[in-house]
Image (cartoon, rainbow, N blue to C red; front, side, top):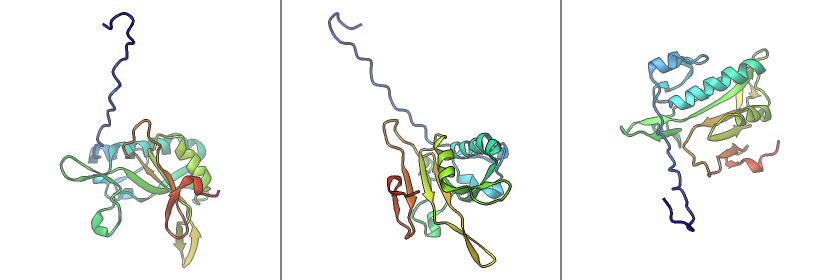
Length: 181
């Protein structure tokens, strides 16, 4: 008990950041909207990331008429990529905490406007959100715009600014504040 006349300050709360858990076969089978075939490297994916994506797809996708097409998930370094989208696990393996993809309209199967995709993602507790405004999809030799998102559940401190960025036309990653809608 503090002495009279002294200010009592409770100890600062400890920040507990749980390391991500890898998804299992059983976990994947409980997802409503995604199968193992749709998630590259599903056995290396963070369960938290997959559950959040599935919940977002269920709660917002059903009411707003869109679905999410996964374009990239776990990416091994051996493929020459700069990132694994991952977290180093205690067993030495990797756990991927990010998904890249596109929100598509259920009726037209075309991407939602990028600003709409971003606004939907902001409603959810994603740690990092990135925009890919210049993705394209080639169909029958014709390239069409296919803008999409990077969504991740990396560990962030409560006081830390959550990463928000976009990839410009020349492939540079820039802060979201520089993006022109």
